[in-house]
Length: 126
View (cartoon, rainbow, N blue to C red):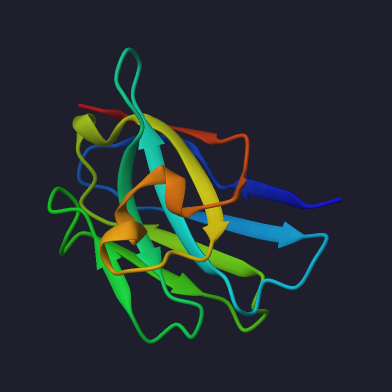
């Protein structure tokens, strides 16, 4: 049974840092891209960041570029999101996803991913 589990969410002050972790299990994810999406209350789920199966290519939403960093762990089934200089508008439930996007564009959309976690809450206080 495939599982994707996020951890590391919590409450952080604006300007601070927080790191999220994602661990996938139940099959080999070495050939899968991994990504983070987020969904604020009353909003649609939006793309945050993605990393290719090799780890060589990364993609970021404009809103987090320069502040967030995505990386794969040495274990190919793990991924991390390091969040710096967080803002109140970063408050959301953060979801980890794994999949095999066909194109660079597909990395940015939920339908590029097959497996999803249940999410972890990140709250940034002002």
